[in-house]
Amino acid sequence: MPWGESTGVLATLFNFAFFYPLFMAWLWMIGGLWYFYHWERRISRSPDEPPELEEYPGCSILLPCHNESAQVRETVEWLLKQSYPNFEIIAINDASTDDTGAILDELAAEHEQIRVIHFKSNQGKAMGLRAAAVVSRHEFLFCVDGDAVLHQSAIQWMMWHFVNGPRVGAVTGNPRIRNRSTMLGRLQVGEFSSIIGLIKRAQRIYGRIFTVSGVVSGYRKAALHRNRYWNTDMVTEDIDVTWLLQADHWDVRYEPNAMCWILMPETLAGLWKQRLRWAQGGVEVLLRYGLKALRWRQRRMWGVVFEYTLSVIWAYIMASIFALYFIGLLVPLPDTLRVETILPQWNGVVLGVTCLLQFAVSLIIDSRYEKGLWRVYFWVIWYPLAFWLVSMLTTVAAVPRALLKRRGERAVWTSPDRGVRP
Image (tube, rainbow, N blue to C red; front, side, top):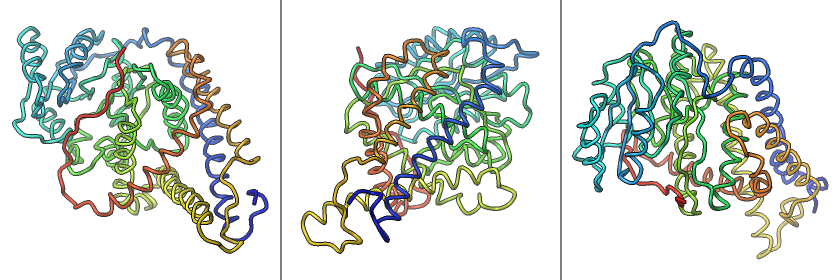
């Protein structure tokens, strides 16, 4: 039974499963292009040419670390190369079981800009950021993961928003994928350009940003202090603090010139764990703040709330379609519930073409920040099959995990899959 010939309940499921991603893809493309032509291209010249500031207030770079011995020295070396003239680095060694702590102490002895906080037991990233924020000397805080490489001008680009916007509470940077030696790595290069970057641009146009990128983000300490800093019981502290600040009417901005090169999973197991954590974090935030965000005073949050709620519904509808298909292979089902095939029909062709168009739009925009992106265009053909399936399954799994999680339970570190290093 092709999608167009379905009737009743099944037709409703198929229609939503088809039209929701189609509508969102066009919304992201239009919003992303609007943001680019009416804002981004007028301000940014090149990531290497940050704007001059009227003043250069001091800032603190917070570096949470847990078992980062293989990467942290390189990360700190790049932080020390920042073109911004006035900063300190506060590294948090959260009970690492390797020699991360010793490396950080060695670097602190060599550079007076570096201070190190050591935790004896695993406290989690949010608690580490809290501790560093309390002892920081400056009003502006920038968070960078212990395995990332920050562009030399990134701090100055993000600081431009704080200096020129008194209501700016946070700025999120532009993560780029470092490891791309496997198909999963190449797929994620396209994903971070065409999905994550484009979504942030579009969300800035129609309302609020769903989340800052925890790997590279900046905060105004006053905004954090009003909201008790990062919550320690949320799986994804970056999503949580983004909603908190925006609910308090602080502006959260996206700065594509603030580039940060990151390591991502290149195994299916690593990708599953990462995306399950992201999905659970989104559901936790929706459960905690969703109803409050529907108040009239929070109307700018409505777009983000509805967008994420519909994405959860879409995941369960897709899972239901797959379930009905496989059940139908085992037992007879009524015509109104029988799914003849899950192979793409004309609907799949439309979605596939739209997906490729979305990638093309995003790569045109992002090519000014990273050359050679078109080399991954072939690989993104596989994106809908690989990542939409992962997104669907992790969302379905995340909802019960979020519902069953005890309120107040501390979220602690686990070492992620950082991919295959060349």
